[in-house]
Image (tube, rainbow, N blue to C red; front, side, top):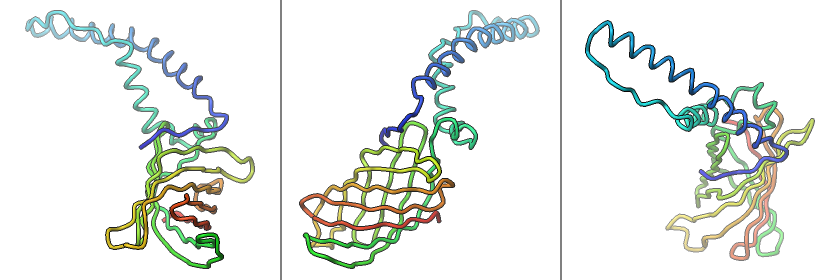
Length: 203
């Protein structure tokens, strides 16, 4: 997975809130642990000895992990953060409309798997001829319309596809507000020189 940017996303505010929570929670957590250890020591007589305090950065790491992998996916929180949840498997119907500068009308289909956390994203497209993986991406909110995803990818044809070459490309997809459908276009570099459209629906 790789980083992705989000337009108008309050990332600095999110980090400040998480850091504030860690600084606030760590002392109380350490006092609670010390109290529990003291009670166990008295009750059992085992002699627990000194207990190393949990540092603030340890609490921050746990809170960040929880937010990054779980909490951000709650609908009300995503509404505040302007982040869509694109996780899942998508069926993709594509059409190549230009190839090597000439008009074309070549349909194709594939499956896109999107793996997303609050901070990272990965798109993997698998077709009968090749596989593509994203290496950079950005998301912007289109009020009243949906979310626009712009990403760059590297394509690796199957070993049996002698006529195809490795190439890079870019795609722009506009997802609906409920993140159930998407429609967009893609462009490839000088090694392939193709332009096409893509229609996505959540599997």
